[in-house]
Figure 1: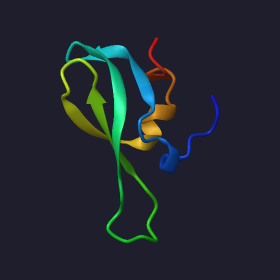
Figure 2: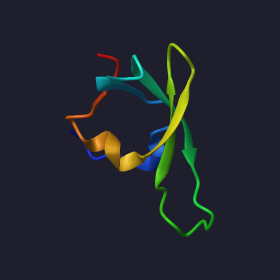
Figure 3: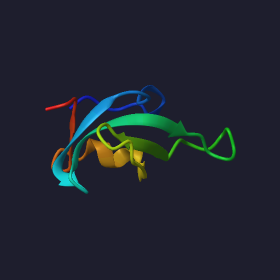
Figure 4: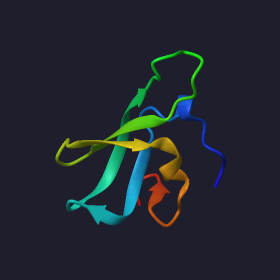
Length: 73
């Protein structure tokens, strides 16, 4: 997998390997900016495509191929 850049994650599509609350397809709906502009980006907000439910995760979790697959598979 290519290294991810948190600034380029907005609107990227992801598939959960194991469905989360019966949801499998997600979209990065927001990149959460840190309080101080000099701090690194840590969090993103994922939105379930079907239910529109949102959850906040550490963006580095998306690099774990055993949990997330890039794109809608």
